[in-house]
Length: 423
Image 1 (spheres, one colour):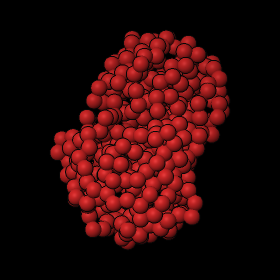
Image 2 (cartoon, one colour):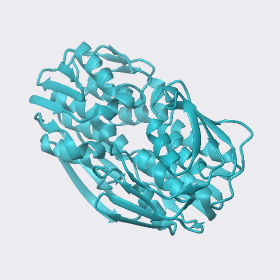
Image 3 (cartoon, one colour):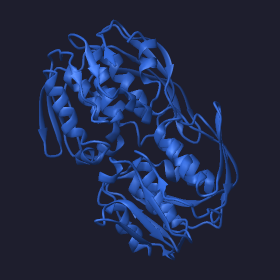
Image 4 (tube, rainbow, N blue to C red):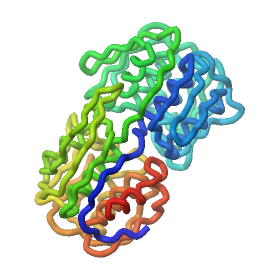
């Protein structure tokens, strides 16, 4: 894929449905009694992997252009699959699914692609075992994972890191546990699971960083409208901020407060972003308009990191075009994503002429000079690919994005959308 430096980006777009919410809508719809109609579902490879896994366990799921219809089988209605459940490249599918499978009366194996087989699963194995789950993994830390029939009991578990995937895996196992399940977070992470639980009739309470769940007798199906993914909107927020003369609007974006760290940081950097048409549905939603502005370096770290962990690669691009120094710290979690996103971004930014330095838990970027277009490597990581494409929009000279098809994991139409705006 070739990226040419462009003039102003202008127009109004919608971005694909939120990936995190799409996963959870299928999972909880499958476990509910009744029919769940999901609109705005993300038709990306990761979310389609979730659908495939539940179909293999006897859940009837119909996919059309307009919606996904899930015929729930009830909390105890899943069937043993005839083969291993394949989660593709999806860490969310893998980790959340293990929480559900820990309480099933059948043996099942979960495996993913080469990337998933390198991503640590010990962090979910430990609490699930404390709940009574019988689970085995390669070197006790990696896929494939095999889960055996177990009787679960509720626990209180303090998360070692703020991770919505880990928290959700424990809470999903708590649906099948005897007694209360309590999770204590070091700092708040995205709360889509808790919100959806409440919508389906599950008693879950949040007090500060403590989440407590009482196991329900059943879940009751509701229709779910998935808002636009702020992680996908982030690429256009940065693009609009760095390409001179740009003004663009991204409609129907989910602005759950546990996900809006990207807005806080860009505004701290001097970005011109306004919110309109706000409405608070199951998830808060609004339209975002971004206009070009000169950016400045900032420090990004601490409690805000879980609120923007997936947006850090494209924030590194914003930092490359900002005046002054940007420090990203406390971001060790980036090392265990689809790629080591710290090393990947530092390597590619440096190749493009950016003054950047890798640190143990992040990076230091000294911006202010125009990057040059080069042939970028993506490390087969969708967020790296899209971040580097944004970098190329304002670079000196043309850029090429290797393995650009990887964007299909979360945003199949990314390049077409970018082109429609003048990219």
